[in-house]
Image (cartoon, rainbow, N blue to C red):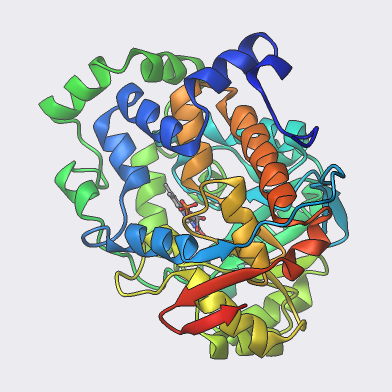
Length: 406
Ligand SMILES: Cc1cc2nc3c(=O)[nH]c(=O)nc-3n(C[C@H](O)[C@H](O)[C@H](O)COP(=O)(O)O)c2cc1C
């Protein structure tokens, strides 16, 4: 076995215990479900509509088969250069708004995981900590996801960009795929709406989740930390949530992306692209990167898996922008699959949140290490010794849009 492979024996103390408790994403998800209030778990796990998108994403990745190669016993190097910076692996943390609902204090815990694992972390506009707080912990690893606040010529949006520049954030990720609020039936059923008013059921769920209550006491209630300063006075959570609901638009026009390009000289990425024509328009607007994503199945129930669309986008863009991937990534093998199809890096949303909910404040560090090790093993099984070899692995991809690979 290549030296980069893990064995519980290679780990000590807490790390070994975490490996036994949750050796994969699936174990983390199951353990998270037991430890947090159901309304919080549902908020993270749920998709839009009948959750069909979650299956679509899984099927899209499972349809990529990689033919193993042997005869070379070098150790795989998982490190990758992304927008001019070298990370431990081409695997990062996707932005998740209201992240503290499933694990209070989530944003700072993820910042620490990004720093110790040397992975990129796209902190969200709606994260629980400010981008300045995140960047102060994970300097160089912090990217900022942006939603738009169109009022007054995007005053708030461009203030967020200026703050990102001042804080040393290296990339802006403008989300395109939430132009309207998607219906999330589980949240409605759990009455997770603004203003949030506890019901006997939510009180019971909280009372029976002692680990989560402990985290709440340590870290405080969830908040929209980046946004508070734009709401007058000393606003309550309900008031900030009301502001967000009224002012935020989860998409941008191509003109707005072009304007952002003029204001920001770091890496500019658009997130949520599935159509090759939109990828083309993004390149014309001047982006450096395109994050091919269906928002983890949370926006459009009819959206295809990004794994199905990625080869079409790769062929259309033909190297004119860096392609990134998310939605459904659960393992290091999934990362190899997406890189074989043309992505340069993948991002995980739910996985890191489940890791915190399952294992506590240091769960993010555990998942960062777990997925990097899985990635090294999947590389070694595929005949890829460097990340740049992965596009040349032999794979077969049977997608509804055609067959590619061998
Ligand atoms: C709880 C939750 C909140 C999210 N919030 C945001 C957000 O505020 N902005 C955004 O661009 N994407 C958001 N996403 C989408 C993620 O960035 C990412 O696209 C998705 O989680 C990837 O799929 P995965 O969860 O299967 O890894 C959110 C996802 C989840 C699960």
